Image (cartoon, rainbow, N blue to C red):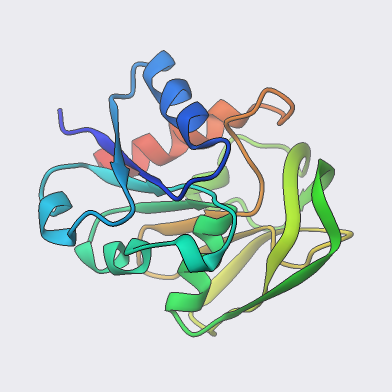
Length: 184
């Protein structure tokens, strides 16, 4: 089986994403975010664009969206997806890492099995503020209107929170759902 690629955007949790996927026996490989897209193309079943300190260090991450693979963006990964499709990002009102209650408004494939509200660990130093019309907002919170998204008619998803950390309720379910999407 082809691996899931985890794109390292130099965030503090990228290695934890990889470790979580491996612990779940989902088969994953870390790739640097400056890897040529042609070296990734056809070699994996899906792509997780990890977090990082800022868009300035996102390397070629936006180019990977053109490979036709299912994509899950986490934190900065969500922001990369949004900006690459014409959206915008700004400084968040709530700032750094902490617990956030997320309200799920639409249970797309990526959020199947979750209740209406979950408690997650997230950073809101930067957050998506505008999405193009072909995106669906799947979840929001009291501090951020765009906590999870899906790009209609594709397998591109993004979440502001970190499913890989133990503080996030049932974070592994998100990875299970993404793996199922990648296998279909």
